[in-house]
Image (cartoon, each protein chain N blue to C red):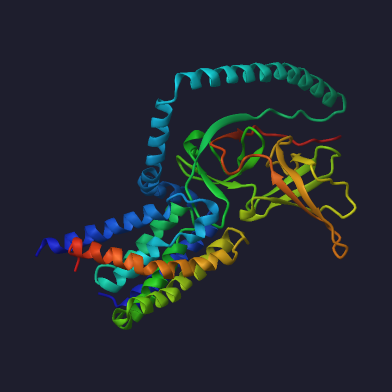
Length: 273
Length: 162
């Protein structure tokens, strides 16, 4: 029986080896996701009471409630459909104009619905787990939105679940553009405060509180047009050449139950010839 | 007599399962630093009480499981837990004679090392949001240790884990 010291050294060496392998060997992710099967029972047992509760709650929902929410949804559906007609027309016009200017076509994205399995990972990173994985077509760097705007992107994929890094994670940066005047910038998350900072915008740039920033499509990761955030605070200091602009995310990062995963077909950026 | 080791293994295994379920139990974002680290505290308790069952190997396996559960770099939690177990083993003789509050203070040291190694994990993620609450959880763990000790002590007697 090896002594404690020997065991400790062996365990430390093995742990370090695992860390190095994971960092250096990219295909190790598949091994890890296959191994992750063993933790599913724990995840399931934590979620089971919640699922049970919402199942029971749904079962006892009153008939009147259901009828009125059905009516509201039908009306909303009708409104959206009528706007969709206009959208189609605009799309055609846009496509024609792009052809005239020799821009390349922008492709439409496929979407897939998913829901957030609310489990805490670590308290100091902005990550959530969603219930679609490799088997459902999720992939790395896949952008995720909800009904209102961009939520984040996929950072890890296992067979049946994925890990989504929220916009507000400091490691997440999104190229954006001001809806009002076309000013471009990059947002970076500020962590658990739940806000974003707009970077590389000079003191003299035209940014006002209330401006909406949407994805610019530059960089190819996030398709253009999705709402990212709204300016809530601008602080200029004379000593620095860049302003500190704080954005509040438009999507409901805390309580989105249902989210959409965008399946990008090779999206081409704008190429002006 | 023959069933005693089996009793012990099941009892300890089950306590770790409970610790893990509690560890991933959803808590609101702002209160998360108040959640004690059940797994580390349970591990420290078992290493102190039954070192022949719970040692470096258990720490390593637990660490791997924890990494898979929390989507961390594989190996980082095992490293952290092995260090904690090794230190606990070194201090074991003195620690068993301490009263509960002195033990809790030593837990400060042990959990401190755990958090320190975990900083490495956050570096891998490229995350700079380690704020003061990251270190304040150590105090929470120290305060909670007597509770865990009390609970597991009765648990140990109940399952007759010697």
